[in-house]
Length: 495
View 1 (tube, rainbow, N blue to C red):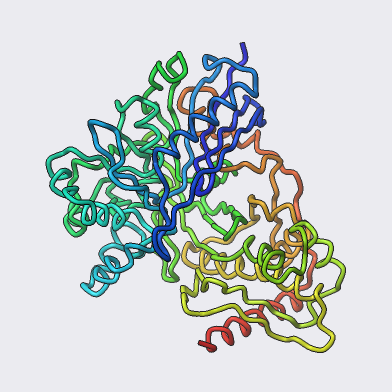
View 2 (view 1 turned 120 degrees about the vertical axis):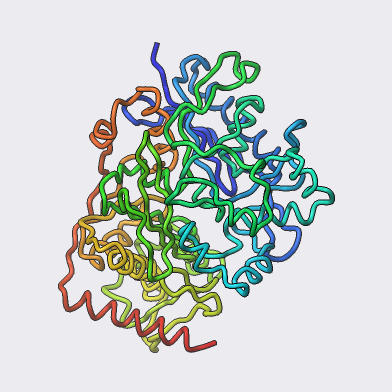
C-alpha cells in the first residue's frame, strides 16, 4: 500500500492541504479561503477557530479527492503564516481573542514605547529582529492588556500562547501537545536565537508569563500524533516551519550561501548562512532557517513590499491589462523601457531602504512612452528590488551567490525571470514543483520518520523546470541599475 506525506500549508488568506508522494510529486491539493477581519484601519485579524475548521475541511477534501485512506498518510508537516498570534484557554481550548495577523499594526504604540526606552539593540542582538508590530511578542502583550482579566489568568497558568503552527498541532493532538519549532519561535521577538531559548529579559519587558509559551523543538521531529477521533487512526505530526523557511527547505537550499526568492504579493528572499547567525548592517533580519537533530541553520531575510501586487495594480488600478499573464507579452514587445523607471513604493520601500513614507513614482516619461514601456518598467522594478536585497545580503554574509532559486506566482513570467538573471548576472532556476512551501514542510516531516532518508536524497529529487541564463553585457547591466538607483533616490526626496 503506497504511503504519502500530507502537507498543511496554512496561509494568510487560505488553508491548503497538499498530498505528496515519495517522488516529491503533488498527488492532490485542496484549498479553502477564510474570513479576513478588519476591526479598525491597519488592524488585521483572523478567527482561529475558523482557521482550524478550514484546515479540517481541506484535509478531508484532500483525502477524498485523492481516494486514499487516513492510514496511508505516513506523516503530517505544517507550514504556516508566520508571526500571527493566538492566545487560548488551556482548559476549554477556546481563543480569548481573534488571532492577530502578522500584517496588523495595532501594536505599533507598544513598539514605539520600546524603541523610545532604548531597547532596539538588545532586541536586535538577542532575536535578530527589528522592534516592529510585525512580530508576535507585542501582539501577545496587547491581547493580555486589552482582554479583561486576561493578564491575571495568564499569570495563573490558565492561558496558552502560540503561532499558527502551535495552534494547529495543539488542535490536531486533542490538546495534548503544546510545541513550536525553532523557525517559528525565532519570529516572536521573545526567543534568543543563539541561546535557543525563550529570553527571560524580553518576557519581563513584554510582561508575558513563561508558562504560556510552547516548548521549542527542531523543525523535523515527532511532535505527537493526531487524536484518533479526528481521522480514525493516529497520524504522526513530524515537521513544522514558518512558510518562508519551509520554502527555503523545499528549494533544497541546504548549502551555506544558497538563496531563494519568493515572488508573491511581495518578495521574500532568504539566504542560508549555515550554522552562523549573521548580524546585518543593512536592516536584514537574522532568523533561524530550521533545526534538524542537534544542528540549527540560520538565514538572512530581506523583504520587498510590492512585487506581484504591482502587476495587480496594472490590472485593477490602471486597467492597462485584463489578465496578469498579458504583462509578459506586452513587456516583451518593446526592446527596452526607453529610459522609463517605475518605483513601485505603493506601501513604502522595504530592504534595504526601510522607508515607510516614500510613495510610488515614475521617471523618464516622454511623448513616445507607451503602455508597453510602462508595463515593462513595472516588471523590471521587481528585478531591481531583488538586486537591492541581494547586494546587501552578499555584503553582510561575505558570500557571493552562484544561482538564484525562485518560486511564487510571478515566476511563470518568462520575461521577468530572464531580466532577473540578466540583472544579477547569475542563473535563475525555476523548479518543476512550484509549491515549495508545502514541499518543504513535507520534506521536514518525511525526514523525521525516515520516509526520505537524508537531505542528499531530497536534493537529488529537486528538479528544474527551466534555467534562465544571463544574456546582457556588463555596461548595459551597470547603466540600467544606476538608473534605478537614481530613480529611488529621487522618489525618496519627494515626500
